[in-house]
Image 1 (tube, helix red, strand yellow):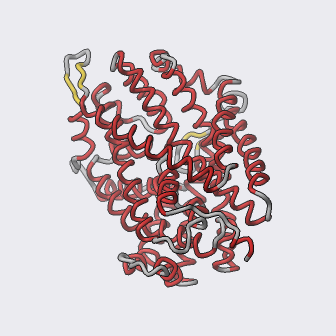
Image 2: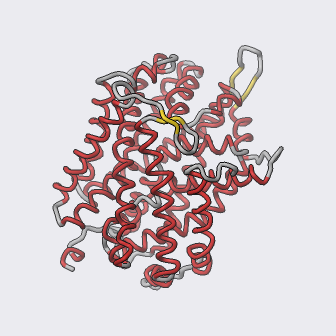
Image 3: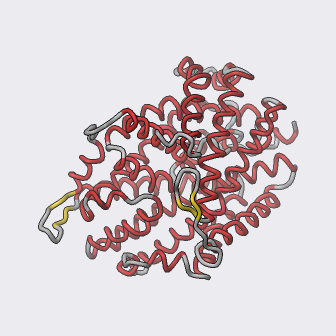
Length: 468
């Protein structure tokens, strides 16, 4: 009890919302959302994503934040406090950020590399074929940049909830938002004539992005879009990885959870949409529809540098601003991932923040080195159950995102929906007297719809339902 009374908390709802939004607005929003939107028919994906964000995403986000605030515990120990026999779910929830942190910091190092390249006027070199591959397969530089990024994240987490996480979020998030909006607006104003004489512009790319393309849509195709949108929500809202439970445990008891959760949903959806506006019109303008087929690292580190190069002189400036924005997004997300682990260590083992953060830094560094070596000394290629080719980073990503996260989400739905009942969460949300406007929707989602959708997503992720 003394530990709970002495627990740090966000100074207000703004600090919580910005920190939570900072966690949600990460690499997944920037490189995965635009690709899925382009692949899945533009407007159809956007509509399904919005519906799922307001129902499925809202349910998981509300549940995790409320669990955190009610228990005043991190993910590793919160589930045990809700129900003794379900403490295993806390272990799974804590394992997710432990696995994610090393490879996320490696990718953060890649972002640092490209930001420095554009900052020093080397954008043209970054656009050359083989630049990215040569960099990630080199022996030393990826390791150095991994440590630069990791230590920046660790510094913020070492400083604690108020002086570290909240203070940095209040500075970084407004800057990030300005950059996102500015680059998105610029992306709509560009035009390009290719070698065949075809003229394309950003507004045409925007039309591809937002207007639903239902041509040839089948039932199987619809379910594919639905599953893609639902899978993206895990990244977009940072649910099923313990982060929102940890952040929820720092929310004061007098805070209006309904208002805060609505703001997080709005902020995240807005930035995810703008990520598409930043990227899809620009890629379409300079590379056509075929350029929109890239996803993940190849989109950000191979395709986009070519787009910036094709812009001419201003491309180096836009590239610098873009990778600054990506760096901020990666930093705030990595802070939340690390905090979920650090808070778990503090609550489980009753150790200081400094000691817990030091332990997690060492774990993340060791794992990050392993990931870097996976591109040179330890390189191999295996096929995952879902058919994708993989090496160390991809395997870690698959275990955390395709296996553990759906399991955590399914378990949470069963625990809250059927074991301890939704009233536990509803009472926590309403205890300050605020009206829980989507209460009935929440009950239906947590008990029936969300578990079914999650099981389908899980079976598809592990390759059982390849027909969908």
